[in-house]
Length: 244
Length: 225
Image (cartoon, rainbow over all chains, first blue to last red; front, side, top):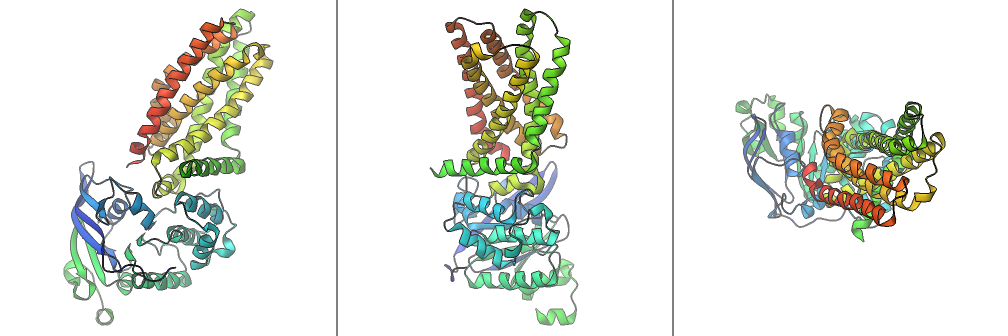
């Protein structure tokens, strides 16, 4: 990982983002912004619109209305730079089962036009303790190992903006700790982090900002420390609140 | 140059997966051979009758074997949403199309060689006198058909009845390529004068290039949700 990157600049902005699936509004008028060096935690019940929002930020889904701006550029019209800067982990791994972990990383690394590819692949594999399993076919990996391989793919091109949808799914406790350590370092390196998890305490321990979604609308967007937990339906113990 | 590397990267990935699975080519060849073989029983007759029907038999076999191949081609992309994974990269979607189409073209081309060889044996017909014409017709016909198979394969991959949908979507448009290919192949086998066969090849090439270019330009819209 390189040293700290440029900080305090607006990296991502959404303007009145709305998404309909048929008559169902998955997102309604979502306006957010994220700066370099900032980490935010996306929280909400099932069907709140978290995955839809993350998919639109990566241009995998097109908004019904509204805009996503990355470094001031509309990603629908000019998404190349945004794609080169975004690392995304979704519910699916985006990995070919018939290729080994290393072959997958080689394939995606070449799509990103990476130089010194083998060195970067080794670095990404080491980041998630996957070097020893780099020659294993992805289809033969357990769910947790596949998730680690997916994380390695997302971090392969050294992204400035990391988007993670339920990144802890399937990971063992040691891998969870490793990932938590890595995610804590990202803002210090000047990167932006936006992630979702159903484990509120886990998310709260990693981010200073909470974006709470419910029924496609932003119910709260601000510092975690002053979030109105009760009105958001989040039950915390006194000890947890004391921990922040 | 960078674009060619990306196309090659996608193409070689598909070849590598096929080399490991040997599913696509095997199923295409077996299915194509089966059609050619079964029609052999139906059309036992005079040489003239065989010459009249063989181009249709071959192109029907190619068309259905192609559908199998196009479905398989996107099955590996559908698992784990790999096609989406590719679109996350900063590459022009049309390069993804070219890489996938090239792989489909090669798989279908190999299956065609097997089918034509089998047809020559079973129907006792030599393709050698018109080999040059037939290669050109087969190349352009397959190019256009593979282009349509690639774009409609990508569309059908996201539908529930994808195997049926590919056929339903693709055949009404591929009909024109198949019809002209059958007509030109028939002419070549009957020993048309050079002016005629050139016209036949030109017609197949023309319509195939139109469909290939249109598919190339439209592919990015197919990838959008």
